[in-house]
Image (tube, rainbow, N blue to C red; front, top):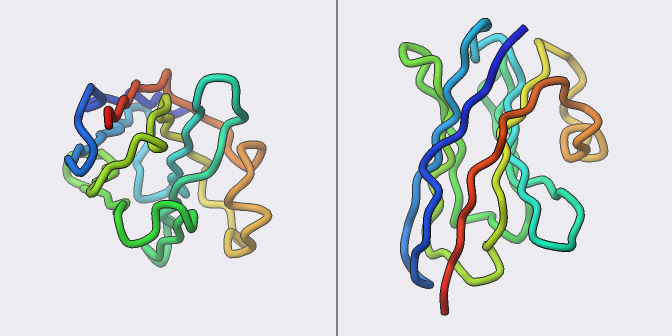
Length: 130
C-alpha cells in the first residue's frame, strides 16, 4: 500500500505563496487519484483539489479555484499543491490523500468526499496571518 508524507507547510502572511509536497512510497502516484484536503480547527475536513490518475485532469474547490494548483512529478513520485494569494481563511492542516486507479472519479460528490480515498498522509500545518 502507498505511504504519503506531506511537507512544505508553515507560517506566512496574507498574499504569500507556499508549495506543499506529498511524497509517495510503496506505490506510483501516476496510478492513483490524488487529492488534497484541509481541516481547520473545529471544522470538518474539506476538499481542496484532485488530480486524476489516467487523464491528469484536475478539479478544485470554489474557494481555491484560480489560486491553487495541483500537479505531480512522476519522476519524483510526488504530488504538489501550489498555493498563491493565500488568505487567513486558508489556515488549516493540509492532507494528501490517494485512491488506486478508481474510475468514475468525475462526480463531485465522489472526489470531494474524504471517504473516497483509502490512503492519507499525516498532514502539514499552514497558517496565514493577516
